[in-house]
Length: 296
Length: 224
Image (cartoon, rainbow over all chains, first blue to last red; front, side, top):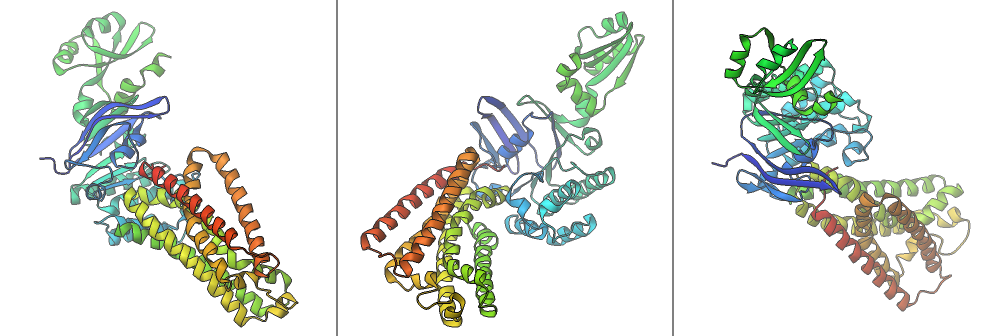
């Protein structure tokens, strides 16, 4: 059954000689909140643009519900990609008043919920008569969140929705996202750099690194595979033998390593004289994608 | 397609026509109220061709601003292209009609002698529309300038400086053409059928090149 499954197969994308996506495969199951994380320049926005038919690809295919997304009205109308608004960019959005920008949502998204949009507008205290470029960074993020939530699109994608929001507003955003998810059960993909705060919201995490998806699994399952092991250097070396060591730090004779290992190997290590600590999603991300910086 | 058309009506067609109508009414109004102020008289003289010349800029903004906006809301490129053809036609004809109406109103409502301080075909742009032989050129210009502008908008995405230079040159040519039209209108310059024919051919050729460039660019347009 292909209904509402977004599939990408063999995606390749280059900008000149810069290969951004490399033979990438991805499957987005309906009814989940996905977190898309990756370093700057990893290709997140390019990937999201291609998945939603807003960007071109050099090779590969993207389907939604078994049908091509590219130029397919049926598929396109089911997908909302609420992009990060950029104040410096000379775009059509920036020249519009907020109320006119929201009118676009009403026009293009079949499930648009105007009542909800009005409610969020009042809550966010965004002046509908202001032009987009006159808004603060935080208010721009609120508008992108508003579009995404009020679109009621079965597949809703948010690119950096928390950028510029203060901590209270970010909390409120995650709360609204969860409320909407509980109510509608629709699929969300949220691209963010604020990993730690969002980790509890993501049901599944996709990690994009150097143009490839290196992880796409449930958040808890992913986190459970990674641990920090610290202790005397020789003991740590002994217990981590056979484990995938992702990073190493030395503090005198004290050694701290980040490992990826299954439960059996960790159980054996627990009997040794070392400290074993679970890692947060952010630490897992750094361990997987930040190794070059750590080595430097 | 319906969504693309509604989008274009709301964001593009009605806005352009409203701006041009407001500008025309404003110029007529100030000249009606203050016929002795020379600067208002100058605006009146050059107004009738403004809406047509500005079609180039509107076409340019279509591909640099409005296309991005529509595509970011999941509008199909094909719908946007064919919708834009209807929009170009509507705004082109609308602006031509507006120009003619404003010329007619000015000639009938205002005391042009007082405004210009002399006798004769003072409101040249408006009178230009009364010359049947000039109408094809103005209509074809109105219909082809937007595709040309749209093509320049596509070019701007790849070659910003070159496009800006071309745009400035075209605007200067537009102003020069306006002056030329004024001389033709008041009879200073004769207007021969062959000039009209070749001008029309030139506009159509440039318009077709613009259409082709815009069509090719639109097929793989990317949201920035």
